[in-house]
Amino acid sequence: MFGFMSERTDIGNYMKAIDSLLPAFTIGGTLPSYLTKLYFISTMIFSPSVRGALGAVGHVENASRAAVKKRKHDLVDNQETDEKHDMLRKMLDVSDERGKDINFSYEHIVVESHSSLFAGADTTSIAMNSILYHLIANPASYEKLTTEIDAAVANGTLSLPVAYAKAIKLPYLKACINEGMRLHPSVGLTMPRLVPVSGATISGVYIPQGYRVGVSPAVVQYDQKIFGPDASCFNPDRWIERDATSMDRAMIQFGAGPRTCIGKNVCGE
Ligand code: HEM
Picture 1 (cartoon, helix red, strand yellow):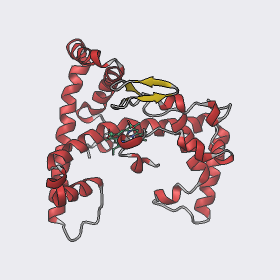
Picture 2: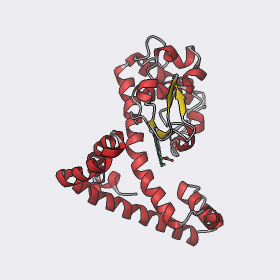
Picture 3: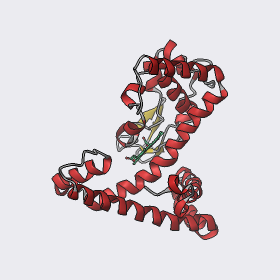
Picture 4: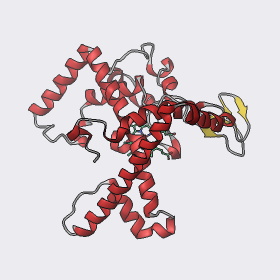
């Protein structure tokens, strides 16, 4: 879409922008609410890299707008023959059919596309890095995985192009993906929520309405009571030998509840 692969360069400094902004967003999002605005204003004044990055964000927004426009035109031009059912098509269809009733306009689609680029780029690459890193650092697991994949290719279970639905049926591959995302969750933050009007009792402590609470996957996913005494080690076999259902319940690498990640079905839950 942007031309990174063909040009082999960071076109429009998009990647640099994300690298500069994410640390600032992370700190700003973790601070107590009364300090957030002050922090963002001072970062913009005193950090030239953040100021520069905001310009690149504008380019990403323009690229998202252009992509939505192009997809809409393509669909109109090739109504009969276009068989691609991607996210933009789904959103355009929903907006055309009942956008007025549910307040989902063309402009919302542009914003969804823009925010998905931010929310889906680094998260996906961190997850892939973690899985690959742990496999390279654990040659026995790497060997076991490649043996499983080779056998699946030999007996026809897998063929090129590899279908997600088939790949995810390989138990050891699924275990390696779970284990990589468990040990290094892409979002190591608390994913804050506001306590509702009724207040909430969490771990025996009453918390009044309006307080910000949250849980970090980087803490829960290391819980030895759930994952065993070797919780800090890369051990894909735990997903095959132990109770995978209770471990699954403690995996919050895509968040949880109504504001869970919208990309999780694209990325593999
Ligand atoms: C391995 C890849 C990914 C991981 C680990 C990941 C993780 C997360 C997490 C932890 C959250 C916060 C959820 C919460 O607060 O409960 C989130 C939200 C979100 N993610 Fe992802 N994500 C990934 C890929 C993607 C992709 C590919 C997209 C876009 C297609 C995407 C779009 C979003 C959006 C829009 C939100 C905000 C949802 C909301 O607030 O309603 N993510 N993601």
